[in-house]
Length: 273
Image (cartoon, rainbow, N blue to C red; front, side, top):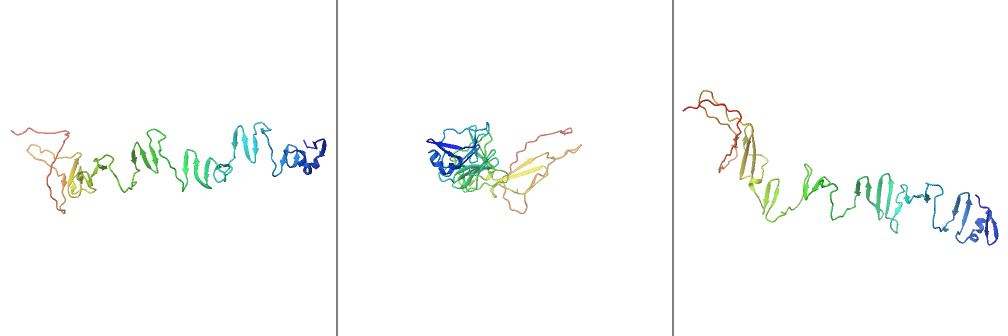
């Protein structure tokens, strides 16, 4: 429908006179630039006061300056910085990238959310008193370091750098991979040496502990053959299990051997009487 006449206080105005006389038509609308079929435009500094705006076509919603209001929801349609939160307009929430929510604070993008991931961008910090595991028993992984049940597990070949490690329980000391460090000293028998002194024989494994001066050597045997019996006669048997170094002076205070043997098949003859 095209508006042909506007009546005010008994006076008719043709549509051609609307622009010139709009201010006299209705005190609610200051200036009307044009009125055509299905469209009306309010000029600058004009306002429309209304209690309800309803969609014309069912299911289409109402669009206000590219913002769709439909079925109780607001659709920003991916516009950048579309939801402004503060008075000066520099703190916003937007999703101008598909499936990504950006949080801008004081004009800078500080945080970002994607599916299952919340990211603090460079220069931003997440401050919290407690970080709890989502799945029971899984712990929390921080840059490859697993924090779980009060303990810390580092990835293989990772380095833990710290200036001071203190005992948690008074007088208990600190144990590092089996080595007890307590009251400013290391327990010598707890320090495993990287290279054993001497040479182990076949089927013998050597592990040595000490401080480089006082050394404890532990030998482990696997399928060690002590000797084969001599048929029809008396014989004594033995086997070399470890050779001490000959170029390094050693002071041997004591040697003790504790051996547990598991015997397979044993062949014997009639002992001499």
